[in-house]
Image 1: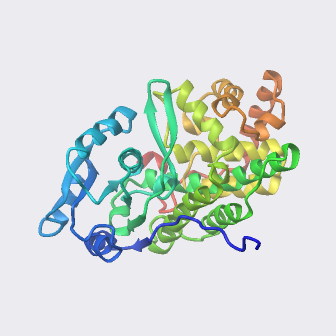
Image 2: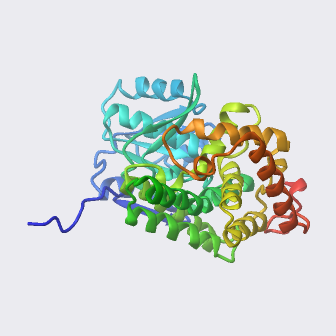
Image 3: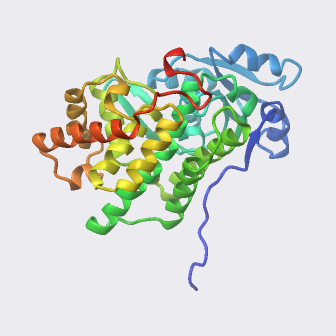
Amino acid sequence: MPLLARMIPAPLVVDVRRGALAELGTILADQRISTSGRVAIAVGSTYGPIVQATFRDGLAGADWFTVDGGTITTAIKLVEQIRLRRYDAIVGIGGGTVLDVTKYAAARLGLPMVAVATNLAHDGIASPISTLDNDAGRGSYGVPAPIAVLVDLDLIAQAPARSVRSGIGEIVSNLSAIADWEIAHSLRGEELDGLAVSLARTAAQAVMNHPGTIADDTFLATLAEGLVLSGISMVVAGTSRPSSGACHEISHAIDLLHPQRRAFHGEQVGVGAAFAWFLRGDQAMFNATVDCLHRHGLPVRPTDLGFTLEEFEGVVGYAPQTRPGRFTILEEAALTPARISSKVNAFNDHAYARTTSPRITPEGVPLEDQ
């Protein structure tokens, strides 16, 4: 008998709205994640006290742990703290750093993990990947995806505007990553998962074509849902391919070559995606990507990230080494140092021409005032 369906692990709950955090206890009980309330809750130092105050009279059986930094050492420390007692689940409440540390700890302990996002900086909210700093720079670790995802728009509204805008660059880069995956499928025979592509592409297009800004709840909800879908697309594919291509290779190269100068991840992959579209010669997608980034006040050119063109040339040249075996436009183009220099300079000129108006945020505030 032919196999007519496939089983895809997905969150039991995805709750994106204002006040979602207050329902955490109810969700844990109703979904049988923890009927006893014996959960370990990891929080960051910024929102930790605020969040803990929310549950002063609830979740009495929970123990609270503070995550300080996004390193593999921090994650292992959390594992050692939590393994001293028995818990039904681990809850991570915070931005990408807290969630990545918590996902890694949950994987090591074999416990289900609930993600409560207080920021929308990247698509790690529901992804099966934990990105942590290590002795070699930064690494990506495969982990089970969260069993439930909550995004409280009240908390998102309090996050720094720049970090929330970063999530836009992250989700928009999906379209470039998909193009790279399609190239690898066409030229190298790499297996392409159509469902994963559909999820990642739909999420990116919803954000790219939305007329709102981060000041609007409808836009924030679309961005949050898009980031969740992007994470699920990686679960479906069993790889980061739906959302990681040349754009992310460029970002990883920045992290490794210039660790003290790296910007937000979404800012870097946004510029990487724009450059990848330019390399492909796809003027329509280059324009659409640059317009979206510029409209939301995100970096578009290497200089917007604080790099000279010569430094960015070095980043592009090194980028393929960050993901050995992953075929993208950077590998297909067979870039020599001279060709990299020519392409980077031409990219900078075209991006500048596309963004000649004063750079302001969607809220009408000059970036220098942010």
